[in-house]
Image (cartoon, rainbow, N blue to C red; front, side, top):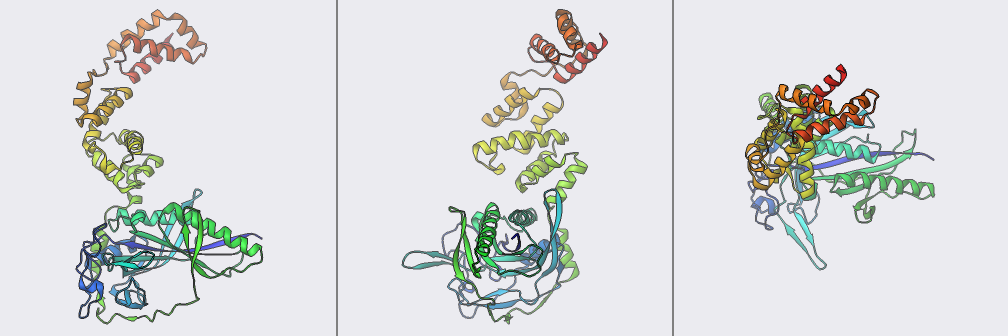
Length: 476
């Protein structure tokens, strides 16, 4: 029997605010445990929550990017459950009226655009972090109260690949909008997936299994693919799928059981009595949207339409925000956009990958790289010379002109009269090569170019030389 996967995702995104969602405690990653917390985070009696305005602005920006209806009244609720990582015994969230509802996100799979519905986006607070040891558990309240948005898709994803591309798109939106750093390895973006299967063509949902806290985009696809195959195998063997919560073991590339899951959990939601409903003015919502930084899709379109880049180069530049920021800054100093994009996508990226560093750790400023691109664009140096200069710049941290001087590289000869004279000399010295070219022997042209380069010690402009050589050959 052929089965169809039915997949829904719940994505938790930590917001990059300066303070927590309902307390004034600062937000930072990797600090000493329990050094970034306020009395409210630890549920001390008499403490009251206050709403983080920046957190609301960030949520509105993501709602807008996901084409959602934005509620103009903030309502908060209490979600009651008694885990050791939730000191108050309840979580402040939005159950009845999420700030965003009924949106969608478009992904590209196999060259086709597919629209995935998004049910809701709501604001809530994170729990504290538990550190488990064999005989005891420690609690770190630094994470307690960090602002979260939870984005809940409709069950419209049909493969691990679709889910991966959906998460990639969400991550791109929250990173480019400045809402979150999106670092899954640090827990800034966490994915829970609900997976079920059903006979192909059926409209009846199967029994779903939740896979919790997937911390890599690559693992999203692997976890779902494994889970789909596991469930299909169970049904083919006549066994029952157990409704449960599982986790992904990346070392074994399989999902493993965590706990059984009942059909419904009664969290006893009720309105958060310490936060009255907050009316959001149209002006506030519009300003939150208008001040949002440019998103990846918009940048990509701009690069193609205004800078003349092809789809491939533009896509590479917007694959990471820091890369596109570097390109944007460099493009202020050089209008040779295609050449600049090529240097970043090829030479700069090769250097970053070889040295396992990010663009933020790259030694050359955007202005210095643009200076090198100017030398190439003006035909002052050829591509081989440019790469020598590039290496010297990385070694010495000087600009392109200084590196060129240090290497003793002379500017390319672009004088047309001189080039014409050298071309004539080489043709007169190599009559057989002319005959070979006329007979369609491709090597002849390369041989003649090589002779010209040899005669001028490689200092002549190769493009002008090739053009003039072809012109002279076609005359004969």
